[in-house]
Length: 389
Length: 134
Image (cartoon, rainbow over all chains, first blue to last red; front, side, top):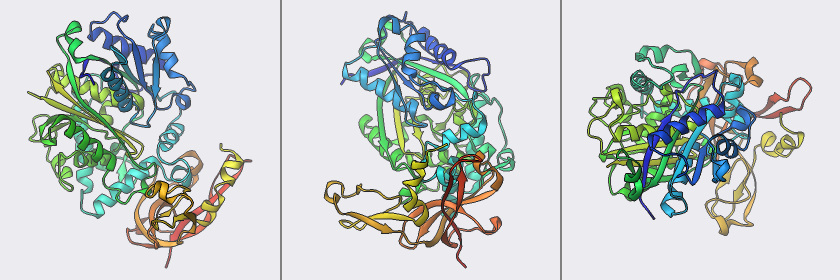
């Protein structure tokens, strides 16, 4: 297997982008990544796209063909593959692309992630989200995606793993960083009172515990590490990309306050690189709800069970804090969550951090950065570790 | 809108909490599975019908304020993960209950209720919900 490098990144702004179509967003992100990698386009020999549900959001299937066509790759008959894994679609697309380059099947691969959500009404959007859990035995029984996260939160509070305030503080952390990210949907820091007083969605979670509905796209360019210098001086190494699965329905698990797939993917990734959680300086975690962010910090090994909430509430995970800096992009909560784009955008943020181009969000002297992408109720999780060169 | 057949084929689970049990390892499955994920090959042919216990306790819960269109008229409504007395976790609505008095550990029992309908003239879906078991 060959070592793989990320030689270019590109992201659109995330948000309610009324004037931009799915295809326009995808191409904007791709063009930015190609420009960042100093490529003409003819070098690319494969495309992987993370997209969760264009079929339901914009009534368009066959996203692979659409992107190949509009990116100019179809005229050269470059293979394109669309990947769906719920909220982890982008993370899994990235992993497929890394495997393609590592194996020697491809040399220069474009990874894209895109979602156009706001063409659909809110209730329908939520029903698409609900379908990433068990459509027959959770959503079909009136149990929403938000309420499943709320039941995790309720149980965490009951078991003394985190308080309501500690869970809410994850949104404060994400918004603090979102204010510094020009591409973020919400560029405004919020105090914890705002989170706690926001309208209820599914108790104990309120509106500010939930990632927003967003449009957006993100893109990366990969090549073999040994070739990276041919294109750019500014690249990072992909040290590990692991993936793990879990049951579709939350109720099928013995413990709902930890995601076994995150634990497994993280353990495999650390082992592959030969490091521990303590070696990670900056991480992007899948805070689709605040409680998922708190859980991720524990499952990734950054904090022991029962300690992540306190740490976030104390500000340890903010820029300049004493712990690993979490979600410098603003996370899903403040950067926005165009579902298929999210996992790719997380990796793009880590690349920016490791090559020192994160501007006001820059974490100093980071050697290793991590991205965790989660689908459904942690039913598919990828953990990617990137290393500064 | 789902098909009539899709609802019809799930009636044993939806109406009567019919699951399955692996006679090889003793695991109970709800919803029903024909293949035991623990025993895998060793469980083939040993997974048999099983009626899940209709009483249990609230394992966790939430009161939903942002609901899908089909449940808008019920807002706010409660959902729970119920641990049945034979140890199965089931996610369902919790009804006929004071929303402010739900707590973890509260005894509940399954009842048959209307879940939703495919529009004004479509198929009505029925299934289990839980009520306090006082």
